[in-house]
Image 1 (cartoon, rainbow, N blue to C red):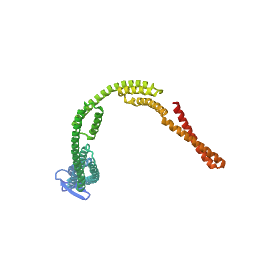
Image 2: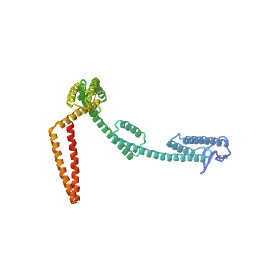
Image 3: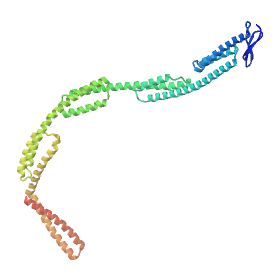
Image 4: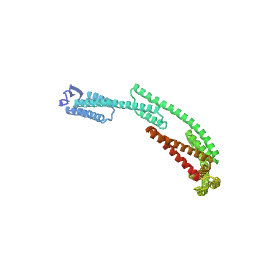
Length: 413
């Protein structure tokens, strides 16, 4: 082979050596002993094109994110070696620059990933701290129904978060775990005490139901009604028994109550009918008693009233709502008879008349003496003595009028 050939990126020397031109100078990439030099350049250009295609394919994979950053960096380093050692003719500097761009992109993405990782870790730290704080709040509270489920949710949330630095992660986990353990311990203690209280309540309610059943057929309405109220108070104060026992005992207690109060209601209904009939009888007796008014003859009125009272007592009870009104009407008749008897007694009592006459004589004597004193005071011109005498006379004369009125009443009765 003789002759040379060249292009902007390489040449073939007279001895068949093929060179590639780079920014740092020429480098031999092979030799061509057979054929014309142009064929040699074309052959080595094709090797360049294949290398350039590899670089572009790698760039596409790196830019699309298909490769992990470590895989991309290793692939770029590998292509750099291929480009540096390439036995090809072409713009190897362009390939170097393209690979350098990929390295910059990888470095930028590493920085973004570090920043994102830092942000995620800070968010995870904040979230784990919030989990620990909520766990401590639940642990110090008394929500035994929902707390267990919430702890499970918090644990699953914790597991989904990335680990922090060992010291921080361990400290937050210790807070969360300690709160969960303390809550579990307190919850077990609460339910143990609750079960004990429920068992105690079951025993108390068993006794209440048994007593209620012994009272269900009693006819001591007042006493047993009060006892049932006391049993109900004890039932409420006892608290809840275990659910199954609570329902069974409640049915027993309610059945005994219903039986007693149904019987009482029936008895009261019969009693009400009897009381209404009694009320009609007593109203008839009241009409008879009120016909005695006004009292003209206290003796006959008293005899008649005595007979009415005897029949009144024989009638029996009336509805409670009517007791006050009919008793008041009966009392008014009795009070009128007593008043008539009192007037008669005062009129016929000799001692009363004697005392009234004596008082009358004393007042008349006192008035005569005061009239003399008044005349003397006027004669002397003693105004003060005159005033005192007039005041005393006024009082005695008023008293005398009352006594005379009383005597007149006693004489006319």
